[in-house]
Image 1 (cartoon, helix red, strand yellow):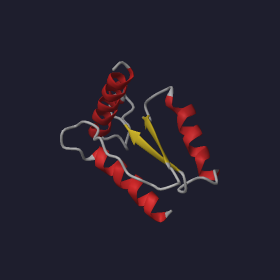
Image 2 (spheres, rainbow, N blue to C red):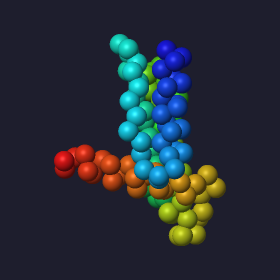
Image 3 (cartoon, one colour):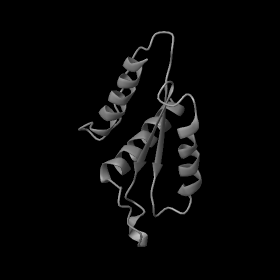
Image 4 (tube, one colour):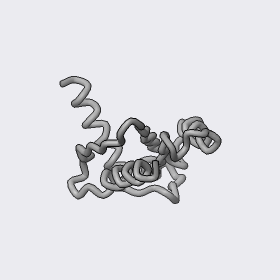
Length: 110
């Protein structure tokens, strides 16, 4: 189980630090057990984000946390212009979200 957690965290890290700015195609084997990486792109300046943030926070009480569910919150910076800069925002997270959307859009219409 610990190996699975490490693999999932490495996968998330690889996506963050991809030098090309695009999501990487990476496959990890986990044997009989599978984990689920839950990615939330959020911002302190986003009026629609609090419900999603609350939903993600509820996972703290979920027995599957860090066993089969691995939540990650990426704070994006593109809402900063409205006057409430997100202190956790990283421009690379915004780029990661755009790259993820591009990959998902392409794969849905292939």
